[in-house]
Length: 258
Image 1: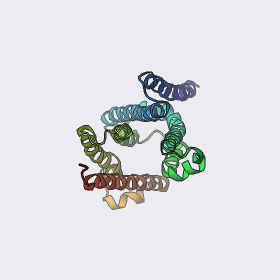
Image 2: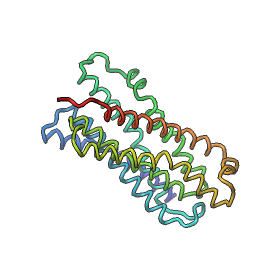
Image 3: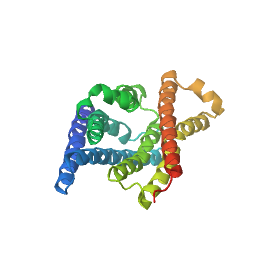
Image 4: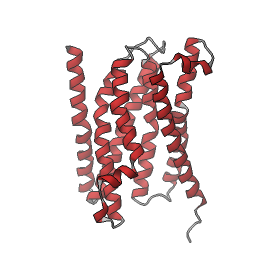
Protein backbone atom coordinates (compact mmCIF):
# COMPACT_ATOMS: atom_id res chain seq x y z
CA UNK A 1 0.00 0.00 0.00
CA UNK A 2 2.83 2.42 0.83
CA UNK A 3 4.52 1.77 -2.50
CA UNK A 4 1.23 2.33 -4.36
CA UNK A 5 0.64 5.54 -2.42
CA UNK A 6 4.16 6.75 -3.25
CA UNK A 7 3.58 6.02 -6.93
CA UNK A 8 0.37 8.02 -6.99
CA UNK A 9 2.11 10.86 -5.16
CA UNK A 10 4.90 10.89 -7.75
CA UNK A 11 2.40 10.78 -10.61
CA UNK A 12 0.40 13.68 -9.19
CA UNK A 13 3.64 15.53 -8.52
CA UNK A 14 4.65 15.16 -12.17
CA UNK A 15 1.20 16.32 -13.30
CA UNK A 16 1.66 19.49 -11.25
CA UNK A 17 5.38 20.09 -11.72
CA UNK A 18 5.76 20.18 -15.50
CA UNK A 19 2.71 22.35 -16.33
CA UNK A 20 3.55 24.57 -13.36
CA UNK A 21 7.11 24.98 -14.60
CA UNK A 22 5.82 25.80 -18.09
CA UNK A 23 3.51 28.55 -16.85
CA UNK A 24 6.24 29.92 -14.58
CA UNK A 25 8.66 30.22 -17.51
CA UNK A 26 5.96 31.66 -19.73
CA UNK A 27 4.95 34.31 -17.22
CA UNK A 28 8.59 35.24 -16.55
CA UNK A 29 9.40 35.60 -20.26
CA UNK A 30 6.24 37.62 -20.87
CA UNK A 31 7.20 40.00 -18.08
CA UNK A 32 10.65 40.33 -19.66
CA UNK A 33 9.07 41.57 -22.88
CA UNK A 34 8.53 38.44 -25.02
CA UNK A 35 5.32 38.23 -26.97
CA UNK A 36 2.83 35.48 -26.17
CA UNK A 37 3.92 33.11 -28.95
CA UNK A 38 7.66 33.42 -28.35
CA UNK A 39 7.18 33.03 -24.60
CA UNK A 40 5.06 29.91 -25.14
CA UNK A 41 7.58 28.29 -27.50
CA UNK A 42 10.64 29.13 -25.41
CA UNK A 43 8.91 27.94 -22.23
CA UNK A 44 8.03 24.59 -23.80
CA UNK A 45 11.65 24.07 -24.77
CA UNK A 46 12.88 25.16 -21.36
CA UNK A 47 10.64 22.56 -19.70
CA UNK A 48 11.99 19.90 -22.06
CA UNK A 49 15.54 20.90 -21.13
CA UNK A 50 14.79 20.76 -17.40
CA UNK A 51 13.18 17.33 -17.72
CA UNK A 52 16.18 16.12 -19.72
CA UNK A 53 18.65 17.37 -17.12
CA UNK A 54 16.66 15.66 -14.36
CA UNK A 55 16.41 12.40 -16.31
CA UNK A 56 20.08 12.29 -17.28
CA UNK A 57 21.08 13.14 -13.70
CA UNK A 58 18.96 10.23 -12.47
CA UNK A 59 20.62 8.08 -15.12
CA UNK A 60 24.10 8.96 -13.91
CA UNK A 61 23.15 8.12 -10.33
CA UNK A 62 21.61 4.78 -11.31
CA UNK A 63 24.38 3.66 -13.67
CA UNK A 64 27.17 4.53 -11.22
CA UNK A 65 25.33 2.78 -8.37
CA UNK A 66 24.71 -0.56 -10.08
CA UNK A 67 27.67 -2.93 -10.22
CA UNK A 68 25.60 -5.95 -11.24
CA UNK A 69 23.79 -4.75 -14.37
CA UNK A 70 20.83 -7.07 -13.84
CA UNK A 71 20.38 -7.55 -10.09
CA UNK A 72 21.35 -4.26 -8.43
CA UNK A 73 18.44 -1.95 -7.65
CA UNK A 74 18.06 1.81 -7.28
CA UNK A 75 14.84 3.52 -6.21
CA UNK A 76 15.17 6.22 -8.90
CA UNK A 77 14.80 3.70 -11.73
CA UNK A 78 11.06 3.33 -11.12
CA UNK A 79 10.31 6.52 -9.21
CA UNK A 80 11.52 8.83 -11.96
CA UNK A 81 9.57 6.89 -14.60
CA UNK A 82 6.35 7.52 -12.68
CA UNK A 83 7.21 11.18 -12.06
CA UNK A 84 8.22 11.90 -15.68
CA UNK A 85 5.35 10.13 -17.45
CA UNK A 86 3.05 13.20 -17.27
CA UNK A 87 5.76 15.23 -19.02
CA UNK A 88 5.42 13.21 -22.23
CA UNK A 89 1.65 13.74 -22.25
CA UNK A 90 1.97 17.46 -21.52
CA UNK A 91 4.73 17.86 -24.10
CA UNK A 92 2.39 16.64 -26.87
CA UNK A 93 0.19 19.62 -25.98
CA UNK A 94 3.05 22.12 -25.80
CA UNK A 95 4.43 20.86 -29.13
CA UNK A 96 1.05 21.72 -30.63
CA UNK A 97 1.30 25.22 -29.16
CA UNK A 98 4.75 25.61 -30.76
CA UNK A 99 3.42 24.34 -34.09
CA UNK A 100 0.51 26.79 -33.96
CA UNK A 101 2.83 29.69 -33.18
CA UNK A 102 5.11 28.82 -36.14
CA UNK A 103 2.16 28.83 -38.53
CA UNK A 104 0.84 32.11 -37.15
CA UNK A 105 4.26 33.72 -37.63
CA UNK A 106 4.17 32.57 -41.25
CA UNK A 107 0.69 34.07 -41.70
CA UNK A 108 -1.33 30.83 -41.77
CA UNK A 109 -3.88 31.93 -39.20
CA UNK A 110 -6.70 29.81 -40.60
CA UNK A 111 -4.76 26.61 -41.22
CA UNK A 112 -3.81 25.76 -37.65
CA UNK A 113 -5.39 22.41 -36.83
CA UNK A 114 -4.73 19.15 -35.03
CA UNK A 115 -4.61 17.25 -38.32
CA UNK A 116 -1.80 19.39 -39.69
CA UNK A 117 0.04 19.16 -36.39
CA UNK A 118 -0.14 15.36 -36.38
CA UNK A 119 1.10 15.18 -39.96
CA UNK A 120 3.98 17.53 -39.16
CA UNK A 121 5.03 16.00 -35.84
CA UNK A 122 3.77 12.44 -36.22
CA UNK A 123 7.03 10.74 -35.26
CA UNK A 124 7.48 12.82 -32.11
CA UNK A 125 3.87 12.25 -31.07
CA UNK A 126 4.22 8.51 -31.66
CA UNK A 127 7.50 8.55 -29.71
CA UNK A 128 5.83 10.23 -26.74
CA UNK A 129 2.82 7.89 -26.85
CA UNK A 130 5.17 4.89 -27.06
CA UNK A 131 6.99 6.14 -23.97
CA UNK A 132 3.73 6.45 -22.04
CA UNK A 133 1.83 3.40 -23.30
CA UNK A 134 4.69 0.91 -23.73
CA UNK A 135 7.94 1.96 -22.04
CA UNK A 136 6.37 3.09 -18.77
CA UNK A 137 4.32 -0.10 -18.17
CA UNK A 138 7.25 -2.27 -19.29
CA UNK A 139 9.59 -0.48 -16.87
CA UNK A 140 7.22 -0.70 -13.93
CA UNK A 141 5.57 -4.09 -14.36
CA UNK A 142 7.54 -6.29 -16.77
CA UNK A 143 11.14 -6.02 -15.55
CA UNK A 144 10.42 -7.84 -12.27
CA UNK A 145 12.98 -5.72 -10.44
CA UNK A 146 15.83 -6.47 -12.85
CA UNK A 147 17.97 -4.32 -15.11
CA UNK A 148 18.00 -0.99 -13.30
CA UNK A 149 21.42 -0.36 -14.88
CA UNK A 150 19.89 -0.46 -18.36
CA UNK A 151 17.03 1.75 -17.19
CA UNK A 152 19.64 4.30 -16.14
CA UNK A 153 21.28 4.10 -19.56
CA UNK A 154 17.94 4.89 -21.18
CA UNK A 155 17.64 7.96 -18.95
CA UNK A 156 21.05 9.10 -20.20
CA UNK A 157 19.61 9.35 -23.71
CA UNK A 158 18.03 12.62 -22.58
CA UNK A 159 21.48 14.20 -22.24
CA UNK A 160 21.25 15.51 -25.81
CA UNK A 161 17.89 17.25 -25.32
CA UNK A 162 19.16 20.48 -23.68
CA UNK A 163 21.43 21.07 -26.69
CA UNK A 164 18.52 20.48 -29.08
CA UNK A 165 16.31 22.86 -27.11
CA UNK A 166 18.98 25.56 -26.91
CA UNK A 167 19.55 25.33 -30.66
CA UNK A 168 15.84 25.79 -31.34
CA UNK A 169 15.62 28.77 -28.98
CA UNK A 170 18.64 30.44 -30.62
CA UNK A 171 17.03 30.00 -34.04
CA UNK A 172 13.73 31.29 -32.68
CA UNK A 173 15.39 34.51 -31.57
CA UNK A 174 17.47 34.74 -34.78
CA UNK A 175 20.81 33.94 -33.16
CA UNK A 176 21.77 31.18 -35.60
CA UNK A 177 24.83 33.07 -36.85
CA UNK A 178 26.40 33.37 -33.42
CA UNK A 179 29.38 31.39 -32.14
CA UNK A 180 27.17 29.98 -29.37
CA UNK A 181 24.83 28.44 -31.93
CA UNK A 182 27.73 26.84 -33.83
CA UNK A 183 29.32 25.42 -30.68
CA UNK A 184 25.97 24.17 -29.43
CA UNK A 185 25.30 22.53 -32.79
CA UNK A 186 28.61 20.69 -32.75
CA UNK A 187 28.04 19.47 -29.20
CA UNK A 188 24.47 18.49 -30.04
CA UNK A 189 25.60 16.24 -32.90
CA UNK A 190 28.31 14.61 -30.79
CA UNK A 191 26.14 14.05 -27.70
CA UNK A 192 23.13 12.92 -29.73
CA UNK A 193 25.24 10.33 -31.55
CA UNK A 194 26.85 9.01 -28.36
CA UNK A 195 23.79 9.04 -26.09
CA UNK A 196 21.05 8.06 -28.54
CA UNK A 197 22.52 6.26 -31.56
CA UNK A 198 25.35 4.35 -29.85
CA UNK A 199 23.23 3.75 -26.75
CA UNK A 200 21.48 0.62 -28.00
CA UNK A 201 24.57 -1.17 -29.39
CA UNK A 202 26.31 -0.38 -26.09
CA UNK A 203 23.41 -1.90 -24.13
CA UNK A 204 23.59 -5.11 -26.17
CA UNK A 205 27.38 -5.18 -25.82
CA UNK A 206 27.12 -4.78 -22.05
CA UNK A 207 24.56 -7.57 -21.82
CA UNK A 208 26.73 -9.84 -23.96
CA UNK A 209 29.58 -9.33 -21.50
CA UNK A 210 27.23 -10.02 -18.60
CA UNK A 211 26.04 -13.28 -20.16
CA UNK A 212 29.52 -14.06 -21.54
CA UNK A 213 28.08 -14.81 -24.96
CA UNK A 214 28.92 -13.40 -28.42
CA UNK A 215 27.28 -10.08 -29.23
CA UNK A 216 25.33 -11.50 -32.17
CA UNK A 217 23.71 -14.05 -29.88
CA UNK A 218 22.30 -11.45 -27.47
CA UNK A 219 19.08 -10.80 -29.45
CA UNK A 220 18.29 -14.50 -29.05
CA UNK A 221 18.74 -14.25 -25.28
CA UNK A 222 16.59 -11.14 -24.90
CA UNK A 223 12.75 -11.30 -24.84
CA UNK A 224 11.30 -10.29 -28.19
CA UNK A 225 9.39 -7.24 -26.80
CA UNK A 226 12.74 -5.82 -25.66
CA UNK A 227 14.24 -6.34 -29.10
CA UNK A 228 11.19 -4.80 -30.73
CA UNK A 229 11.19 -1.76 -28.43
CA UNK A 230 14.93 -1.23 -28.82
CA UNK A 231 14.64 -1.52 -32.60
CA UNK A 232 11.80 0.99 -32.81
CA UNK A 233 13.51 3.50 -30.54
CA UNK A 234 16.87 3.16 -32.26
CA UNK A 235 15.23 3.58 -35.66
CA UNK A 236 13.75 6.89 -34.52
CA UNK A 237 17.08 8.06 -33.12
CA UNK A 238 18.93 7.24 -36.36
CA UNK A 239 16.24 9.04 -38.37
CA UNK A 240 16.48 12.17 -36.21
CA UNK A 241 20.28 12.03 -36.21
CA UNK A 242 20.33 12.01 -40.01
CA UNK A 243 17.94 14.98 -40.05
CA UNK A 244 20.23 16.85 -37.64
CA UNK A 245 23.28 16.11 -39.79
CA UNK A 246 21.44 17.17 -42.94
CA UNK A 247 20.44 20.45 -41.29
CA UNK A 248 24.00 21.07 -40.13
CA UNK A 249 25.38 20.33 -43.60
CA UNK A 250 22.85 22.65 -45.21
CA UNK A 251 23.89 25.38 -42.79
CA UNK A 252 27.58 24.88 -43.61
CA UNK A 253 26.99 24.93 -47.37
CA UNK A 254 24.75 27.99 -47.27
CA UNK A 255 26.47 30.88 -49.08
CA UNK A 256 27.48 33.74 -46.85
CA UNK A 257 25.33 36.81 -47.12
CA UNK A 258 27.17 40.07 -47.80
